[in-house]
Image (cartoon, rainbow, N blue to C red):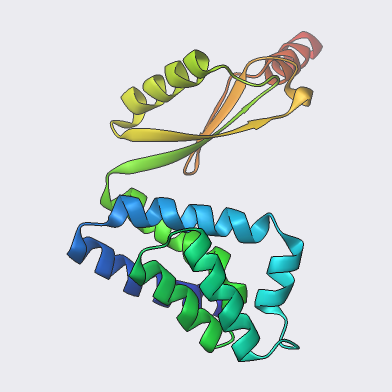
Length: 179
């Protein structure tokens, strides 16, 4: 609860700057790269969130990280601010909240599409197009693979779930045959 409200506060502040400067999409992309870099390195995550390291040590790491990722001034300042206030552990939540605000601002929806096998680009685009038609919004896919589906896909857009998996179809058939 507390983490969410703190993350929202930082994300909204940065987002309002992004809107003001017309930099919503570039900053969103940069923040995603930053989040992936931190999540992809357990050592980096440890240094950024562990209070054993001094503020100066963390700030030096943050400066190198911002430089290596070529972050613009404002997203880099967010990173410095989180570091100075011992809130780098909130980074992922801030980035996720910023992404949600950016998607809403740009009229996009995120759909989680799970398939039994990895989708090729054309299949993913076809699914995105169909979901866009159904929702009347631009849909961006977050893809996942779950072999337990046996075949087909399950798409979730917000609270709406489209289940076209073979597993569900077989389960429905089983229920029908039992009656």
